[in-house]
Length: 135
Length: 239
Picture (cartoon, each protein chain N blue to C red):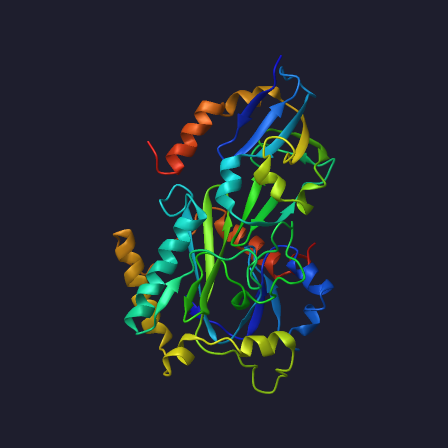
């Protein structure tokens, strides 16, 4: 089954690599290309600690551009099992490959039903259009 | 908004650590207390500036993007400065290869060449007069709200009477011209604030009103928790 990408309204994406999520499945979390572009020049990123348990909507990291600091929010409940440790040293990757090499963390999902509450690609794009001032 | 007392604030990131590693922390004028802002940007030596803060919801037209809020607040300040006779402008673009940008191109963190002080940096949205940066701001963007705060430089920084001014950061700050230096006359902060609020209100098609909003259940406690957090050394020296 192909991987499905979902989005939080706070602009994080989450992807379960093997498609169907079950309790304990590992998913990858990143930041949408729209958010990366809106943040402009990035200077710093704080990753979550591996092993940390997070709740959906909880801040688990920070990203700073030249003029703003934004929180990163967990899209679902779970445990952080891996982080992209190279990312803070190469933040350009977030802009060049936000859905691939620019991944932020991997999470062991506690409740896969939470994925159903997130936005699919068309719904997220509609949110982006609205925030951008489009129709 | 408030005219500040002497002290310094630093951006949220690991600037404090990089500042330490660069030996810049020791360059801070002796005896000047330091706090770390939850937002980004370079360090500011307070005492000769006017500071402000504005908070808007993320759903507010000015809250949806960082640039919208900068444009609104800084654009209003530019109008006031121009009315005072200063040729103020908003920085539109910055040469990424220049010496004075706020980041190191292609790097993931501010490099050793990144200026320590906010007023030595240039980034889009800054307000300049004849090339001198006079207003810089930074934001903390939460899920439901954004706070933007900034510093308008009134005059060149000088150390408090009796304290030592001799330090790299103090010397650099003493070289930054404020709007009084550029005008050649004093500026009354209260009058500037009134004019600024007037332009902000016009931009928002709203009227300014002084009010002390009542705190809801649990908010007083939340204020205390936040105050204790941001007052602590653990916050200031984190990372």
